[in-house]
Image 1 (cartoon, rainbow, N blue to C red):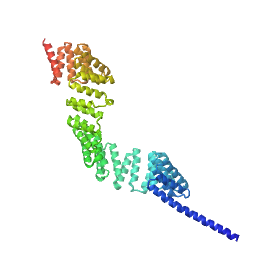
Image 2 (spheres, helix red, strand yellow):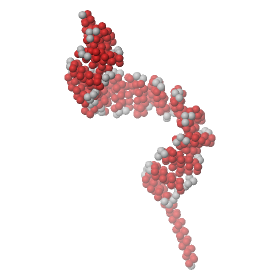
Image 3 (cartoon, rainbow, N blue to C red):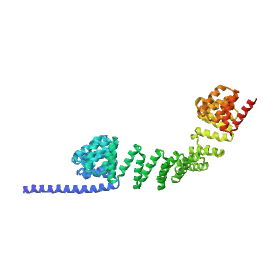
Image 4 (cartoon, helix red, strand yellow):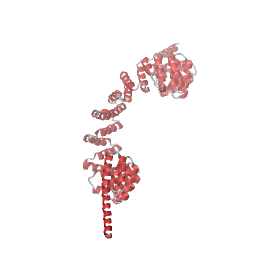
Length: 520
């Protein structure tokens, strides 16, 4: 009876143990289904917790794989790395965990040396094409070119029609500047399946060798045969033409490409087209291109500004004004645009419009240009008192600015205050002693005041050495000689000035004064 009892107990225990195993397996299956659902919903943390719960009772490669995937999706890279190491410890014959560990070091940690070391261990366990390829890539990155070539040579022997390997080996050769070998591998890849990657790499080599025509021929072939990458390739073709100075060809490429595109993509190409038109000196066309961009990207103020500047440069002031006003609709306080539209109105002698916009510049944006432009508004209308007031205000904030000093000197000369004019132009000349404008102005004022005539000659001759055909400088030199009563030289230089600028009234008056003196 006792024996039977013990046997019964043993049997019961066995049955209970079997039930517990079955229950655990059933429970883990339910947990895995739950983890799968969490993962599909993007609830990676919940999936991770559930999978870790399963691993407490069941060591499964599938669970490890799914756990690592979720940890990476959750951006828990250190946890994924730790799980890879733990999985390899539990399954030491599984090379894939070393591969995963190396991939994490490469892709997320950017520790290529560590990744390379792990991949070498991985190859000792299992040598697949993928593992060899990844090891070769890492060998190239850490500059172990000998090992990279060895692995790639072996792969090519086993897979002579796999273009990826030829491209990878070509890249290794390029890094070592073994250009001839690289070209041979790339040509082989192209011959196998017309590899676009190989073609683009070959074009890059030809560009480096200054064989632009060969590069362009390859790129045009790629663009023609592959609509999905043709835009990018054609941009490169345009860039090649631009860089070699063949602007007409570059313009043709960018224009053709722009005609195929729309929206933001087209705007990007038009920017490049406008840039090349600018380099080619075709400013009016560049303005039209940037104006077109404003219709594609109507909320971007920069394009209105650039288009306006091109039109301004080509003296199409109506168009420039229109675009600057368009920019101001987007931002009425944009100081750069307010100053440019002021310039446009000044160039048309619309001083009241110019004043309206320059006065809209915020106090924090009132720089040197602001004071000069505002002063110019009054100077054009001969209101030199206001001109001086504005410039004096500007000088308080910018006491060493020679432009303000020079303009102040000119304004004081206009009202006949030569002493003040002399004071400011002398200061400007002291700050910029090699500036020919200030040299001439100071020399001329000395002549007007009939003082320091020898110094005036030196100053004006320095100015003329920089601009020998400047009519104003020639006149100044002649005027100094007139004051020194050397009428022959005065006549020589002022006559030359009049020949250059015959419409200038002051030059003619100086020449008449010299002639009169010579007759006496």
